[in-house]
Length: 86
Figure 1 (cartoon, rainbow, N blue to C red):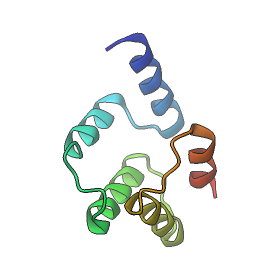
Figure 2 (cartoon, one colour):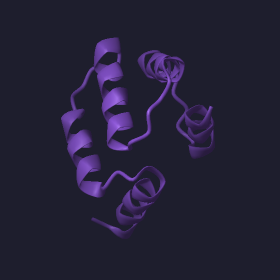
Figure 3 (tube, rainbow, N blue to C red):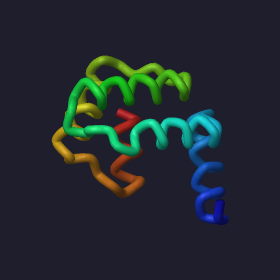
Figure 4 (cartoon, rainbow, N blue to C red):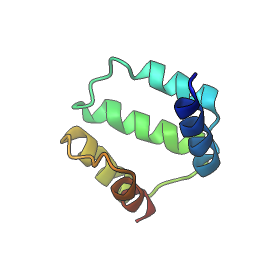
């Protein structure tokens, strides 16, 4: 793992309380996932919420799932933070 990756995983762990091994496991499990399938995306969102011990409302879950399925998810950190903090 290079310094950038280590820094990224450290930041994820600090913000979400999800350790790097769990992030790797999730990333590996979705390598070939169909992100246009609502059921698959919803399962992933719920799993990540559980891993982070951060429950999300049904409304927020719906919004996240819809954004991912429609491929309308912003890629910059500021926009992502706004979505998850609402």
